[in-house]
Length: 265
Image (cartoon, rainbow, N blue to C red; front, side, top):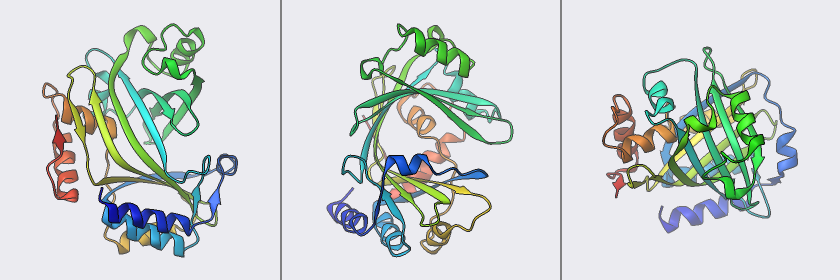
């Protein structure tokens, strides 16, 4: 991501009023609709300027308005969670551990999608040292069994993701926006890594009963909705043995958006 983009981010984010984690936790989107978008850093700079003009607030954690996230995704030896998604299974799950770099906190997180397309996330805090292996943590293994269809001995680390996130909230507190940049992946099983360069993944989480100013901003900037999973794209890029199917199209869409071939090492 170029220096002009970073400068644009800083200026636009500085113009926004901050919102704290405590305030964020109090926002309940009862009829929530989640939509993902794909764009690049140059376009994002303009989106942030528009958001600032509309009165959006930015999450500030420890004085930081851009936060670092490191995640480790777990899967079975046969990559069941990957193939459940690839094969469009309606009911599916993903299991990961995640560290929030600014706070130092780490969590075991379980994402479950039901047959109505709704995704729910359960999480419990774990020691940061258990990011790569929580199997000796009795509380974590019980939590996994309770909230997922997996047991700890069925899963092992497959892939690490690293990215930087900006979180925005609209003035009416009826929508949240997560903006992920500087996306990097490392596959533990193949030893390959990938860098999405200037790609930006945006997720809009809105109360379906309320108007969305951000949808208008995105439409004006010609940023269209796209279904994309960071985990599935990352596995497709870093594991030549998988049957990628439609995920190859997602990779080409990202490359078209950033105007470059994705770097895989």
